[in-house]
Amino acid sequence: MCGASSGARNRGTQVAAEGHSSIDALSQFKLEPALGAIGHSVNFTQANLMMVVSSVLVLALLWIGMSPRAMVPGRLQAAAEMCYETVMSMCTDQIGHEGKKFFPLVFCLFFFILFGNFLGVFPYFFTFTSHIAVTLAMSLFVFIVVTFVAIERHGLHFFSYFVPKGVPAVLLPLLVPIEILSYLSRIISLSVRLFANMMAGHVMLEVFAAFIIMMGTAGGLLYVGSAISLSVNVILIGFELLVATLQAYVFAILTCIYLHDAVHLH
Amino acid sequence: MDLASAKAIGAGIAVIALAGVGVGIGNIFAALVSSVARNPAARDRVFGLAILGFALTEAVALYALVIAFIILFV
Image (tube, rainbow over all chains, first blue to last red; front, side, top):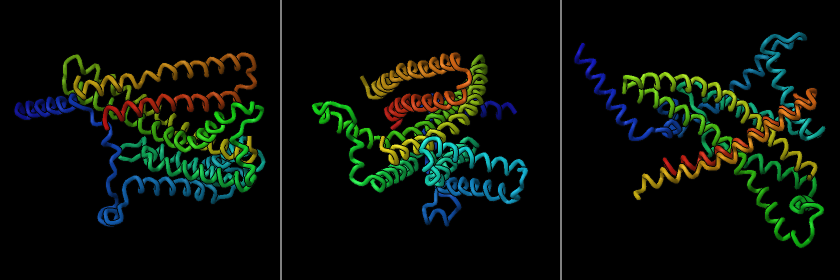
């Protein structure tokens, strides 16, 4: 009994010493092969698994929710209809009546990101949106779609987008490169915003979780600090839920705003 | 100065950007409060805009945070 407790204390001080030297905050984003040998051979990582899970969840919500097709909707059907109507009003408010054409794109992006962000809050799950490879791919896709829509609608007239109206001609050599740069920087700002939000949130959770262990193993008065860290972590989980919704919303609404620019040119 | 302490100082300097973000978020919510006080009927519309502005401003803070993390851990 005594030996076990001293062993535990030794191990505790060891953990505390290791934790003190550096908090390993970034290893949680490491990709590991999922689904055993098959996943290993095709490099199917847990991020890919989570993408599949989030897509299946969105499809299941719509499929199972809408299968009764009741006049007075039940809970799931009301949820599915609310999802549809939220994104539909987002599209039509931002883009105008042509927004219906882009509804599938915005709906897919919004719910894929939303369910991905939510899945990341659960223990033992993985946030695929915390990888810049994923978010950069999505924002590049949005950028390419927006540029194609603009060129298809306006032809070469699209390039007048980079020339601000009512500006003296002397300033144009300065302003046109700035406009082009700000147009191109949408890719980076859109992707880094989502990636940084998710990564920073999870790093913060990890840091406070490490504080719990470090102060809890140190003992004495630091137990209070450990308890405080635990409650901070609980609050942070709630904050993460807010951020998950907000960032999915921001990604979708910025896609809408960019599409509005593409359709109407200013 | 050794590399570790230089890294710590650099990460500290990188998050000075948070001062500007604090001013920005304060401005957004001050404007939200005053506009809702002037016209309470516009609350729902204005609140969505404020949340969008908050998220865009908060992203700047996170850019700074990412740079700090890159300095510290990478």
